[in-house]
Length: 151
Image (tube, rainbow, N blue to C red; front, side):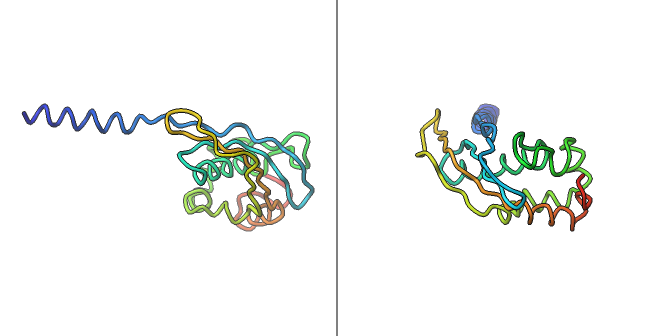
């Protein structure tokens, strides 16, 4: 009986842990200048808050580690070696992502679509995110993540 109970508990935990997660759809640069940029992104989540936060994270991650072709920020702010940059600046990125400090560099997030049911309880939301580039760059320089003139 004890074996069956343990097996059932293990099965329930395994099924709960196997929830499908979706990655935000690649952010698309819309417009901007040297001080700010507006990007459109599709986020996924159980509700509009989760979907919005996922889209915001995807926008900033692309800005830091990929860059946006066609914008004034074509090269990544922090460098293309994402794991290496985050590993060498662990305290900064733990606070940036973990304590949601990234939100202080977002000046606006405007939903441009309704929350759409995607599949299995997951919903999608398209948002336009405006990022304060000047403040983000200054913060990265101040904390030693990047040098004054790039990575």
